[in-house]
Amino acid sequence: MTDARARKKIFDLRLLKRILGFASPYRGKFYMAILLAIITAMLTPVRPLLIQISIRDGLQDKFPGKFFDGPGGFLIEITILQIFLLATESLIKFYFSLLSSGLGQSVIRDIRQKTFRKILGLNLTQFDKTPIGTLTTRTINDIESINDIFSDGLIPILADLLTILSVLTYMFWSDWQISLICLIPFPILIIATYIFKESVNRSFIKVRNAVSALNAFVQEHITGMSLVQAFAAEEQEQEKFRKINSEHRNSNIKAIFAYSVFFPVVELVSALSVALLVWWSAHHALDLPSDKAGEITGLVTSFILCLNLLFRPLRILADKFNVLQMGMIASERVFKVLDNDDVTIDNGTFNPDVIKGEITFRNVCFSYDNLNYVLKDINLQIQQGETLAIVGHTGSGKTSLTGLISRMYQPQEGEILLDGSNIREYPLPVLRGSIGTVLQDVFLFSGSIRDNLTLRNPDIPFEKVIEACQLIDIHEFIKSLPGAYDYEVKERGMTLSMGQRQLISFARALLYDPDILVLDEATSSIDTESELLIQKAIEKLVAGRTSIIIAHRLSTIRKADRIIVMDKGEIKEQGTHEQLMGQNGLYSRLYSLQFD
Image (cartoon, rainbow, N blue to C red; front, side, top):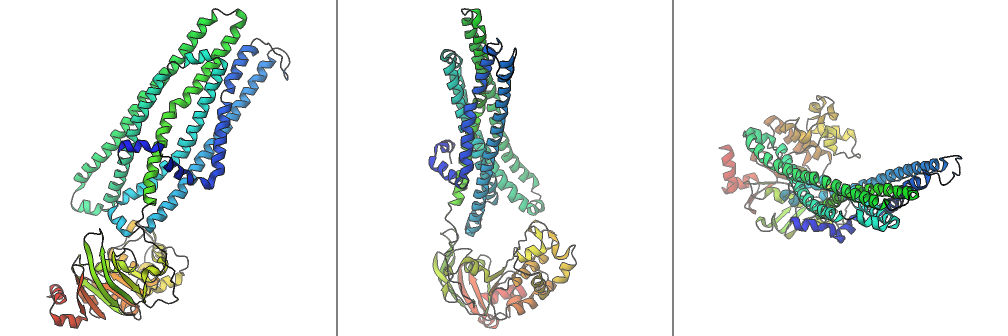
């Protein structure tokens, strides 16, 4: 998005209406905040009026007090009234701030939940092409900026504008001539405000882009820190980070410079207005009789207070417009995530009592970018209870094939059937709940081993967890850890070895007792002893269950019912181990490379 286009977003009423739509459940708070803004604006000029009356009438003791007899009674009463008014204003402003900020927090909570729910439903292709740090920025930083629309933007701007209008109305009502004299320097303020707003706006856009780049860079490099250190690339990566960080700093410095110039200009204009007020009043006071001195003094004093009340919101109004504008820009970025239509459509209703596990591929073609097909016209029948092994060179399409079964990706052509029904007819929870997957790249969440095994599913009893772990002989290892099943693994399970993480992921698949089992290079990172344990568990697990094993170690699939060999997205060979070895084809050559 260009800077010029971004700056126009403040006038995008469609976008603003959509943002306000999220506030509709809290319309009571929204309307109350607007009402308080109106009340505050109406009360603002009352204090200058009371000051004027105090000096004009109270100091000369023209009127007796109603509750306080004697000299100065009226002045005492009007002073008490001012104190009461000041306390009332403070309470109203406190409640107004509480309401507007609370409204913003409620709105961003709802938007953040909706955004994360949308991210959960995106196709995996979106995560293949979008940096994690960028999605993190959208979900955290950008949504936080939307909060500023309510807490520091839209409603506070309305309150400030009403206050300015109210004060100006009082000033012109009191003396329109003096009001015009005080407003002579205002064109300077208008020009300075426009220049300030544009300058800060450009800087804020650059800051926001730099924050997104920083998040993406840091997220990626912390995840891949072992690679950076292994290749001694710290200096090169530090230099890249320095450039991004310098851009962030420079953008902030430009904004700080604009503030440093703007606020003194506001103070200068304010001082000029007061000086013109004093000059005009002093000039005309010479022509007034002595008994009018209190009147002119009260008027001047109230106008000085009005100018302070006028310049206070003007000083920060331009900044609030920038905050509103940045919130609008951030909301557009968030709405791009919410409007992303690359989602897994879940409108299936077929929910059978039993899933047998018969899988059929009919003329399936698949590409990650809609250009280069990684699967080409796949026709494959996997029988119920069959153990199918898939082998082939890296990039031959093995993992892509299994990813289509659980609808992690969507084929461009053809269809996939489960028990004779298109997998799109199954609700996603039913379809994916019937498939257990063990990946080569094991991911464990921060939390206990028990949470990683059950994925925090409260319906899984602890006894079943122990049973699954005992099945693959990992129970004793877990018991030996501090806290046993409550042992806290760190992010991505880095406190455990690769083999240990693989065993835990295997136990997790066993725990869910799937109808279909997918093992994607599940034993590639496990030592020989652990592999023997898993092989024993696999023999029990695959009995009566449809199983798909993607294997790099061909020794682990010799007992498979059928083996298919893939190359460049196509099925080249299929049969048992003995049959394929007898063909002296691609499988035979792969086997020879490993064992000769």
